Amino acid sequence: MSRGQESKPAIGKKRGMDKTVPESTTLTLICTRESFQPAPVEWVRWLALNADLYRVQQAFRTSGLTAPAYPEWEEWHRQGYRFCAAMVQNAIVSTAAVLKHSETEWELAAVRTQEAHIRKGYAKAACTFVTTYILDNLPQAVCHVSAGNLPMLNLLRSLGYRE
Image 1 (cartoon, rainbow, N blue to C red):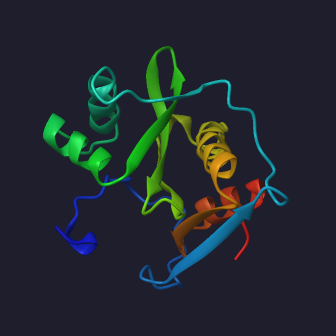
Image 2: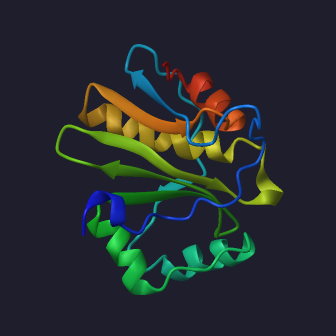
């Protein structure tokens, strides 16, 4: 299966989208060790492939999305995704992933927050967790984001990502 045909993790509804910018316009932001401004990550941990599937499914359903079955969840991991989650009372409230395109190209991806937990710092914590992991292994972290996704752009810029 080629990159363009792969199943990608659903990231849910896009809140705060700037309707004046075409959704197809994608920006690439980069963060380095020098620019990184980390947030606290005490609520965040890596998700286990087998043990956390039911939590992932519950989070998808809470967001009104179709929950992935095990084969789809496993396929995302085979494609190079490794997911983390901000947890509250053992439930996922926000997720982010590192997507390993190659040994030298890793991306912050698949950021999503439950509606009831927006603007509480959970996505920032999850993005910090993944960015820290990337910068511990590579000189820079990359994130591709729609130019109209203002909340995500603001979050990335607050962490030190730059265009």
